[in-house]
Image (cartoon, rainbow, N blue to C red; front, side, top):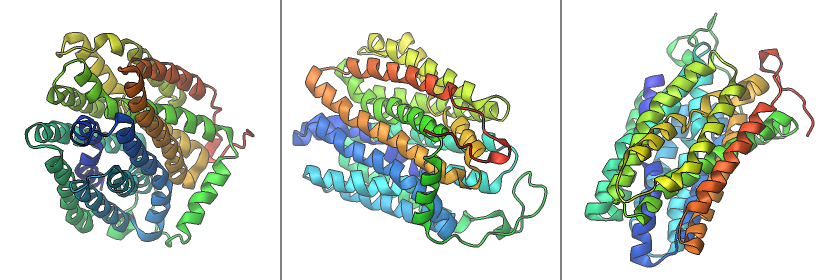
Length: 410
């Protein structure tokens, strides 16, 4: 089941690899401002996050397989229609809304649901492996899509995203299963067999109820706030704006995209290692270290930008790759510690904050580039925010045993 989920997430990862490659081609062909293009990307990122908690509840109601297959089909539809657009509202509709909603159902809440449902022991490690699947997909698709954009234009690249999502649908329908009981197994490490629970009706109400309960506790706001900064400094900043920022300094698009792919290589190692650490060490301290070191590295990035790849930039890329989504396993572990059976849905809301943070920086990064002629102010601001996130996670109190929520008034 973990292997099937891993491959599914890889196949859907093409959508996350394309936005940073679209900014310059769309600006050159249509004359659209980078801020407007960033706005469409920001809607995609925001919907990616806001859809996640409802997707987790829908998986409890209709099953993982149906929700994931529908999500992949929606991604394919939105990406395919993008190839025919000529107006900014079409970019917002196709890439912002359709791909955003579809990708939200393929968000990290999918990995959290599989890990919670199929594993009792080694959950942290499995969460790390499944989280790393997105990075593995980036490794596969970024060099390919950048080559397609450079040689054939952005439209064939959008079609490639659509076809890759469609190709995974039969794989999901034939091999993905909703619960261990479907194949007569107990969850990995479970002391006894657990029957498949009755489908939970009222998915939207359950998602909102989980938010209502979690929002009354302090840890939720600290986790959501720190994870919003995580999204701002990864998906919103590096994934969206690194390629055009490097291109501003004369670096070819293919070279900059290849550096992002290298981030994907080390992201796999860093995320799996973080899952292993999460099973053994205090997740709050892990998060503080991850955020602090990420912020420090961003402060040095403006001095590393150049027209060619050089050793200090490679060091940054390796380090940032190791730290990219290493925050996910300890964040999911803290959600489990506080919110028990609803932890996947609560994590979906925390992920929504992550994507809202990413959306804000995806938009404001483009606006800052239009206004100041460079991205320097964005790098420095994001580095300072990461220091704030490190402080936020350090003040989260320890939860009670058995994963019950701690009622900390806010």
